[in-house]
Image (cartoon, rainbow, N blue to C red; front, side, top):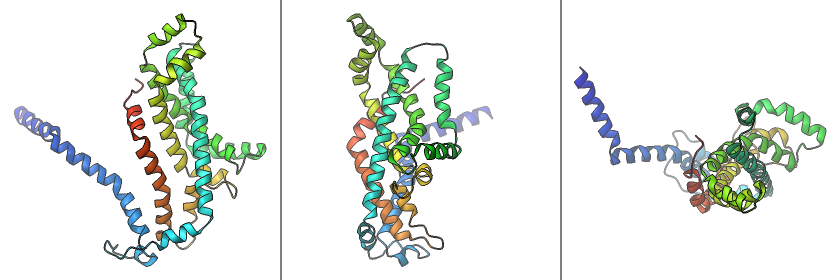
Length: 284
């Protein structure tokens, strides 16, 4: 019995350890991930009737009328501008706050260091819906409801833990001897951080910045509750195609395709920095 189990185990290891088996698994996973994108673009090229047909049609005469309807609406440009402002602002502010904090946690040992790091992490563990009422009340009192700065602050609070814990891993893997040499040359902690450490951590900063930008760009709940007529991001614009009785699937898919295109372009341009940063190191 033992020999049989060993034989079966060895066969499984050989099967999934071969390069062709791994390729098949990767291809299946890629298809699983890319199929929703394919379906969005496919539906965007259908007429409203074709988009609602059952069973779904894969062979049809493509049309661009949905994109024409969406682009004819002047509000679509406002959605993209608001999303770009909020995503860029929250990314920059998160890095400005998170990078020094992560460096302190990675390099300095002080009383309460573990508790402080766990407190930062707990902000991400808290369900976002639990933060909505405190944010709403506070922003109402401060006059930050339906403003870019209010939504940027909310996104920073939501994503700061990711910045700190990812960058903590990057800073931990950088050789501390370079900073010690800078101290001997007369640099302070502050100047050594900006002159030595930050340039070495640029791949990590780039990858984390891209991740935070994408999270902020796609965020829906805070944008729905804390924004209104003045600040409406792209996900809120997509929500407008969902009516009480009907859903305009064709136009919704066209809008979603337009929303995805800038993200795809953004990732293609910065994919080298993203991959280099993500493989640079992780916190252990």
